[in-house]
Length: 135
Image (cartoon, rainbow, N blue to C red):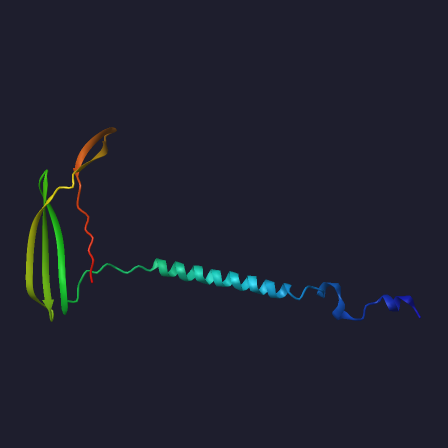
């Protein structure tokens, strides 16, 4: 027999390029799936964060209570708080309340203002911040 016949590989399924670990393809698929899942979650998050609701400009007044707050500076030591309440039923104004109260002024703050390359420090009256809880 010819020795060349023995060195020739006739079993193509046993080539060196096909010999890999049985765990490696599973690991590669798992990592690929993780990347796709993370990319999908990131895309959904970006879409959800970019969609903002427009501010409400007109209310349905079938059964609603509208409340507005205003402040006016009376003098350096006090502020007038004005609270308006409108009660609507079936689209019509049923009752309207106006309440006023005098509150102590929250004080002043200084702010630096630049005009024509000159800086001035001016005093500005602080404003109240409103926090409303609805139940």
